[in-house]
Image (cartoon, rainbow, N blue to C red; front, side, top):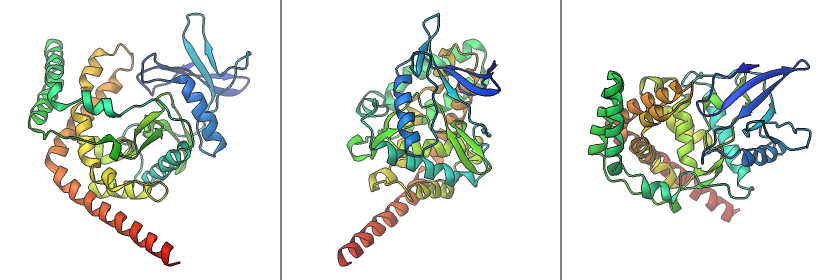
Length: 329
């Protein structure tokens, strides 16, 4: 039995039995994880040709089991292939990732509605002005622990948030729907330059599609490891998504603003200090990346928004032309 290195939340083991490899997964018990939903989602996606997790039933014919300590777990087939760490995937893989995410969104539109992730309550209760006390508490934790670099990053975050505009978003204008919920490079199994499997669907829920598109680019693109977004690469990633999926003008034009807002209202360093996981360093990696990105967004958001508006106009024009030719026959 081998403990998997990826994932800071639950526990995942690789087990070999009868010369075949399996995955035994213990999901975290929190409001974000829905292992029963994961099973239904994956069964549907597999039927539609999406390479989701393949669950194996227990002796009672159930996919979700409980051990002697009352902990829930699942057994899955193991996908042979290669996984990449954050920001280590070759550039050529970005298109494949964007297109598959679009296929997932389109396929999941036919499912019953999943639990809401980022929705009305997120924008209502998470505002940058509310984060002052949270960051101040985490800053004190960093100081007490002698974590000088973390304390410096938190102070930088606080200074940026202090100057941020008071963003207001209308969730009803975003294209929202069922999605993976945690789609990123570490959840993709590759063979050559093709995605063979998409794992870890326990966070499947409803999100604004554009949030997951930008987030998946952020965790995939090598340049983001240094806190830099390649604006043209992100534009191309969104454009590749739209070759299969659909976004409206509000989605595209607010892609940068929304992700900047998301980074500001999520205290990732607090998540790191609160975690008791043996792999909590993963939360620290995410927090450090987010801190660097806040600095980038503060400097380059206007430039990014300008390109997003250009893309939005191009998409709107293409839709009008398509509609015109459909009418004219």
